Image 1 (cartoon, rainbow, N blue to C red):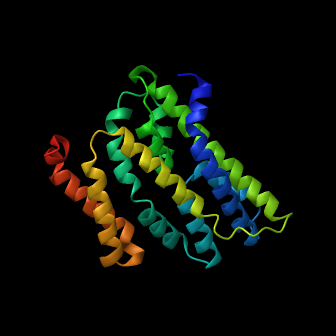
Image 2: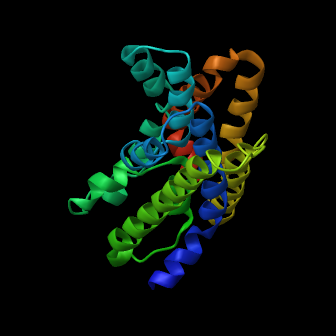
Image 3: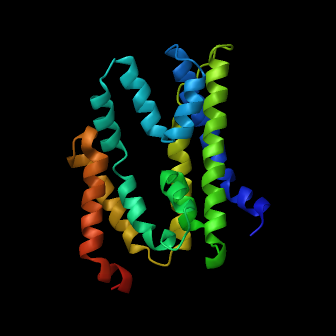
Length: 224
């Protein structure tokens, strides 16, 4: 797979990450935090929702312990992503450590939907992850710099990430021969929205979905 083809695969993520990264940078500028914090946070943390949460906690003068616990709970869903990628990463070289670090929601969906030959996966997965992080860095730094120069109303721009993930989920559904897990996850998600507390809805729904999918794994795979 050529580099140009890999770039084309990441364009949907670019269209979401750059404007959302700019929203993060603008919020950072609004809190009077120097622009280079956007760069270092995007390089060493690279967690969209986690970075937004960090800014909120900074603004409320939360302690390091509070920030650590809140970030851990928010990003606990990535555990499930990592478990599903173990077989794909197990034969990779040291690069798998960066792939694990860069496994965001959108990168995970893109890796799952991309049809890549087994002997090319390490190189292609590395470029996909690296390019996605570059898009986020560009967006966050641009937003932080512009936020100190140009007045900007970014209300509602955070929805771009939700829209992006919906598109990638649809692509994953279309390319996967097993559709039953998608419907199970959808039902559990709707159940969680109704019956779980809003602050804990995501993690509780993920735990319930993981439990159901593990217990009924054979039934899901057989299609019965």
